[in-house]
View 1 (cartoon, rainbow, N blue to C red):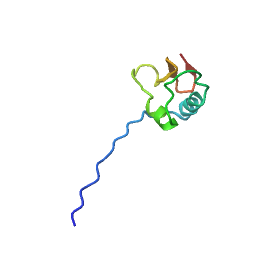
View 2 (cartoon, rainbow, N blue to C red):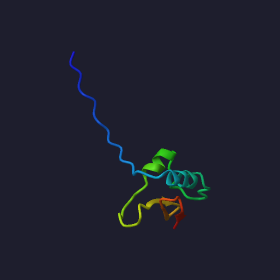
View 3 (tube, helix red, strand yellow):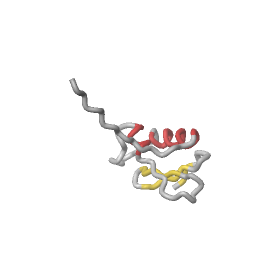
View 4 (cartoon, one colour):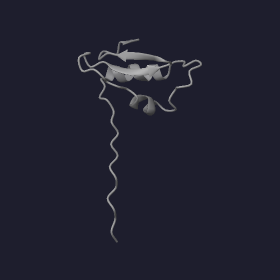
Length: 79
């Protein structure tokens, strides 16, 4: 019997440092208050990380309660 090959699913995630992962995990578990845009899972939140500009010392950005938060390589988070 002929089996069709499985489709390859490409899940693109930005590569993060350990400190960035810990900061992102901390942000996800903050009190989101009245914000309705909290992702249902941490993985979904992790996949929303963007890295738009190469010249920002590998900082990544994520949306949190209507703000854009930047997370630098050392885990320092700022808006």
